[in-house]
Length: 288
Length: 192
Image (cartoon, rainbow over all chains, first blue to last red):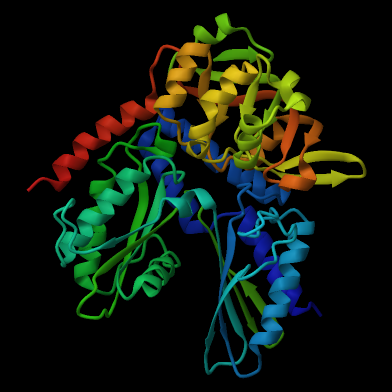
């Protein structure tokens, strides 16, 4: 019988060395659209890299990022035990080269060497009624995290007011500023409202949606579709080499805000969009 | 496709143009934030020989240790712009002929490419498994203990490492071109 730590290790391995099917499909579609060009060749090489990584169990990107876990757990588990299992899995994954040692002490500059540190890995818990665990993991590299942005509306420079048109202007600005630096084609997660913390949390939550799903809110669905078309007109292309594919998708969520604040929080995830889910019910474990 | 063998002459580098697809073989060295600060603020005699007429790779690899030998497991490029304050000085001080990274660099580095005879090359971000396979041998590592695995200076022998020239020694930059073109569309999209 595998231990909980071994289940988390398997989740890390799968997430670091492969991409989810919807992202691969998105990259394939983009490669077809770009055809025989620098953009097309770049996308084809990206897909080939994913293929070779998944076969050899090597990280498809050397920046295995901050491991961000979102754990829904039932009454049969406790946070303490889950945290210990995740930490053990992070250490093992580092030893097996599924993760690069990425936890650096912000005061001394020293790398802990095993992916453990203050707030590292990052774990968000959510208690649910159903027994068992559903753990979602995102490995988000530093390059894409660095091009994320938070706007406070109204914004005079962008002529962005406190409405969806204002949100649209912020997203276009953020993606234009990112150019190829976030490893395009990226996917853009947007959190409207909330506070400075919860806005970014919402933007990351949005990145767990499937690439081809449709927003339940029809106004946000329309904005997502419009922005997807407009951002791909920018011509930034894969890695900023130019081309028709600058983003694979735009995902927008909204939270209630206090009357005085209107934040637009934007998280950009690179083409190497590593997310995975492990579900454990009794002894039954599955991965997606 | 241009085959480049390191070390490489200034003449050969000055012949390259933006858009040239290259395949690089020979010895190069990884360096990122801590290494650039170190190379600028101190003398780095232990790496000077590797850098002369050579190339720097902006990369923080995943490295496997087998007994006493190291091997690269995953080694795509990291974002280069963080080295903008240091790169021109490093190019001049150590006679570096090329810098490989991702995302491009800005005016100070572009001017240094022109003045000292160097180029900036883009590798594909996240192409970690493919690029690690082009690393045939880890020849040495410097500052491993002090800087940690991603930031250490890894001296590597590569074979047919694929990259594209995106900033050349004639003052041209693909990154500037794409920025200018996308700005036109941006202005249109945000126009009233």
